[in-house]
Length: 151
Length: 296
Ligand SMILES: Nc1ncnc2c1ncn2[C@@H]1O[C@H](COP(=O)(O)OP(=O)(O)O)[C@@H](O)[C@H]1O
Ligand SMILES: [Mg+2]
Image (cartoon, rainbow over all chains, first blue to last red; front, side, top):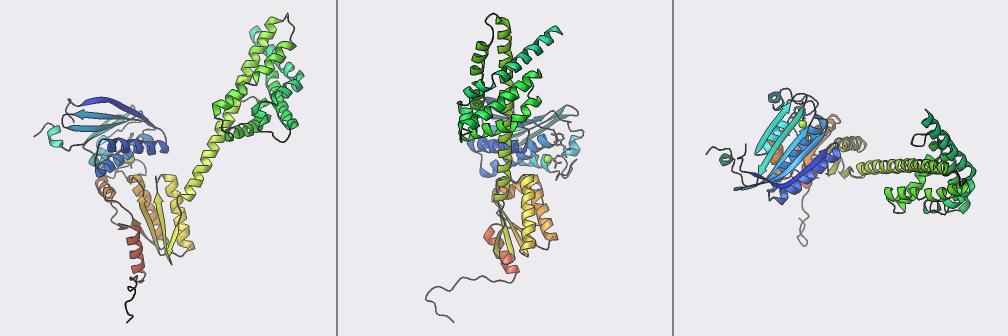
């Protein structure tokens, strides 16, 4: 997880996720924000793709919800945090859900595990019956070792 | 109970008034932009349209369902109202402006109503005016519904057209077809792409089908799944699929996602894909000898 010194600057945007069109909008907004922060094209593409996976999960598995997009700033650089939240059925077995190829529907089962590989920070918080929040964060300077507290 | 009876009584009184003053109301409404710009052939036509609306309102009032947008009385004019609001939006009015135009119809009726009622019957007049306001508010909602409905239909139609035009199958060569995919590949579009492509494979006896994704901004697991399904279906039809236009950033992303496109033939560009298909067909494309070079 990121050091608590990271401050969420004022800019938090909330986008509704309730339809396929909303997914396209989420991708668009994430790409804009990532480009604005100066992320490289590869990093932008990875983040947008992770966002697409998680937003679709929010829609398809969570029955709809929203994403909160927050600009972050700490000593080392700037970041973008995306928190996808729904009040759907939740994930009974998170470990299983995070397994490559596991799907409860007809998907490829690569959304959660793939998204985790595409970004720098990933947390899954789900309570069965209450809903799911998946949070991902990417930073402009890639120093994951320093951030995790290890050295 | 008594209150209910009074309310019904008032509504019916309003209904009777509307019926009585049908002609006058229609004459006053016929000059309003709402009717005038729709029924342009003759003023009589506009007057007739107005009468139809007055009749509908009178009918609804008689049944006491002043606030009910589903009252059967509105049924007879729903189509007409829809056409009116559609033509108003074509004239550049937005839904709330159209709603305002409807609201504007109340005043002339209110004036007639005040003139019509006994000066002593202040309370009854007032009650009828309130009922009229409620009824006109409901009419406004009915029109707004038809406006929104028309808008939705329009969007759905345009969406369908977009699906059609955005996924053309191009014949590149004898036996080689290509689909340049552009934009978001959601499930609906993927379905159309697959159907069009399979049809083209059959219709053109194509042995090679190129799916070019240069114009697809994001390839996530769903898009990849659609691509793989399309490739598999094409294979069943006896055609080999080649996916081209995978940009470097997308290639890296696909790998990190964990998607295995190993079973699919891929090429960097549409030109490379075409060259591959031609070579496989035994067709050799060589540059024309430079001008002036002597033929062997
Ligand atoms: N927001 C969510 N709410 C409930 N279940 C979820 C949610 N996100 C993921 N899951 C569960 O985790 C599984 C794996 O998700 P994912 O890796 O995206 O694969 P896929 O979406 O292709 O099934 C899903 O099939 C679903 O059962
Ligand atoms: Mg998924």
